[in-house]
Length: 348
Ligand SMILES: NC(=O)c1ccc[n+]([C@@H]2O[C@H](COP(=O)([O-])OP(=O)(O)OC[C@H]3O[C@@H](n4cnc5c(N)ncnc54)[C@H](OP(=O)(O)O)[C@@H]3O)[C@@H](O)[C@H]2O)c1
Image (cartoon, helix red, strand yellow):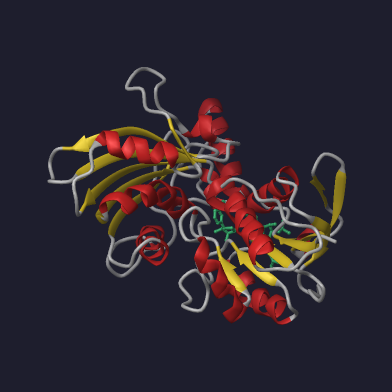
């Protein structure tokens, strides 16, 4: 017997990738249930090569008998349904921002802090970090282990798929409008995104930073080390899928480029592409649809005693969301849940 798995937000960008990752990685499911809002009554979603699932409505769904819930319906919806699902006995792996900083909810990137998963026992909920945080901490972890990171300065170049299906549609429609000379009226994002960049993701905080920038700082500390200082500038760019990050890292101890490159090459989930030549680095369009966190442009920052610069790129819907959640489910199934079918021990 395998697991009964429910995917909440199954019609969305992240939910569809969750279904794809479950099928591709052959997660041992006996039954998969697709849940979304009442807007999706009558819709179907595909699962794997052959299966079609009827979408069911979350509001009145009974989670009794469900082992694992992969969730991405937005923070407010998660606040309402996740405790209900956990009370019914399911373990919720949640992609929204709702539970990430709850001290009783572990915030997990399996390559970085798999041991934290055990904390699910407190509330029955495990949080998936923000997409920009996930790819950054996967790249930082092997370096932190070598030379202890003191401070990170990061600028992000985040694709519109991070804002959901509606933001992708807006980039498509605005791009067309530019070519046919139609007026542009931003509706989902705050300003024109076609042929433009917007230094504003999520709401503004009292100190002038945005909540996306705050998330990168507090989540990195919760996952990797509470002593790391992080300052971020998060920018939406006219790319459909794939986030890029220019990351400047300051270490406590010296760490050469050679040592960093060698550690990153051995790190789980990381692929180093760094040839210092045309095409010798990875861009978001090339990372879309892939599982890895790509690290390029590894070089010394000569302006501080122990500094390095990196270019980090990954598919925000896969490693930044769905894949990370399915990897958490794999560790959970393998190390914490009893099933007659052994969960696959996939390489991270
Ligand atoms: N995109 C990313 O890179 C990324 C990364 C990490 C985390 N996240 C988080 O994941 C969540 C979803 O992101 P997304 O990109 O998949 O958004 P999306 O494409 O807009 O999809 C939203 C999904 O949530 C469902 N939903 C909305 N309201 C609901 C309700 N009241 N009850 C049940 N289901 C409801 C939608 O169902 P309907 O089709 O029925 O409306 C849809 O399936 C967000 O919280 C986001 O912050 C996204």
